[in-house]
Length: 113
Image (tube, rainbow, N blue to C red; front, top):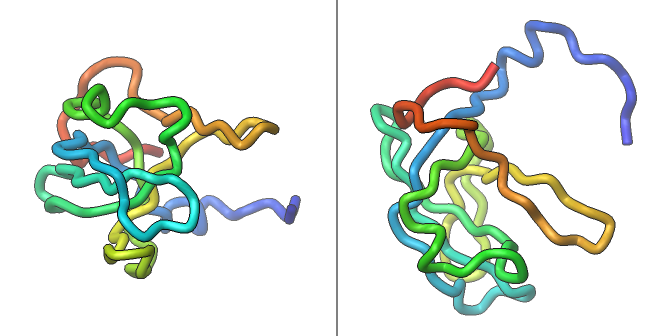
């Protein structure tokens, strides 16, 4: 882990935004169990992502939940989908992931900063 401090300008370049999960289903062909998520980021569009959160979350229960994701990473092929954003979560020692969410509903596309 790099403990080199970021500058404020570097931090501002990371586009973390709130989105609402529209669909969640098993990601076919993934090496580790994961869900394919479709997420609405308001004016930033609807994007797909994969998330290795199957141990903690039920796919149907994820629909309608707001999450936080990084939008300005380049797209990446993951199994059968092109992932268009990185959903953020807290990763515990046992590799269980807890999704990061706003404390109350906000407009899709709201910037985190």
